[in-house]
Image (cartoon, rainbow, N blue to C red; front, side, top):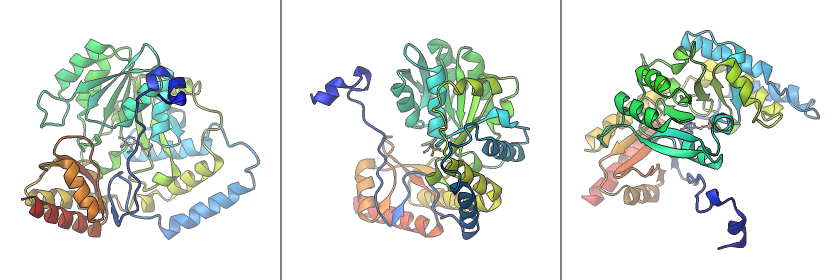
Length: 368
Ligand code: PMP
């Protein structure tokens, strides 16, 4: 054993770090980013904001990110029909950081976090790093289905008495949105848990999919996390946020680093929120490409899972790892999420959809 490995915390030994490949390829559809760059209008607004803040960079940022919280609360209020006050909003460097704040405050050694697999791979990693035991819950008894069986979820929540429960809607990597009945039932079945609904992909959901933000009132243990990395096409900025009870947010202040959101991040995020119509203008086009991917894969004899997100989980490959490599050899990078016979593909531009479908067609023809 390497000397440093010996010195590492025992519970971290042997773990592998998060590692989605960052490769320079013509078609990169592996991390659910937006393929559309930031528009000139928003670049100009960002530059104006950054210029204004630049002369104050000798000072620490507003620790309470007051303007940003107000703008995020305004965005949630406008898009969910629920009045969200700024004191119900918290933000961090990506939703990964706000998820980490939750686990740091409410998980920890001797406590358990429950998630329903397959789901976002960082939930167990964030939990493990804070010493929280992870329970890989089952979504259904039928491995070919990716919704969550309400009765089974309640059973597992009752059995494990978790301190944190992760629900993801729409779910990554399956694309499946959750019925709010499941959220309510899990909340009631886990009276000692903070119940997190990770809504990173909420803006891509099909019409009629309600946000768990509508359930916040009267549920002080419920937290809904969001991000600007996906629909806002702003992954490089690292801005994630959550809505929850004001007292829960007060408790998160115990674990955050002072001044964790830089003045530049705050200014840039506010500029983007002011230009939200432009920022979100490609969402419908991305949904159309997602639906085209589903239809194209079906035509090729593959089995795409219906998706409410900006990606599609596609089944029907004989060997996912071999196909992943064959696609990469053609310049198309998708994600092997470790589900047998499945690959996950982010929806991008029409040209990227054409490239993926053409590459699938070639790879399948070679395999058959
Ligand atoms: N939640 C889910 C379900 C995700 O898929 C991701 C990113 N892939 C995140 C959270 C984290 O995103 P970010 O830290 O960029 O906000």
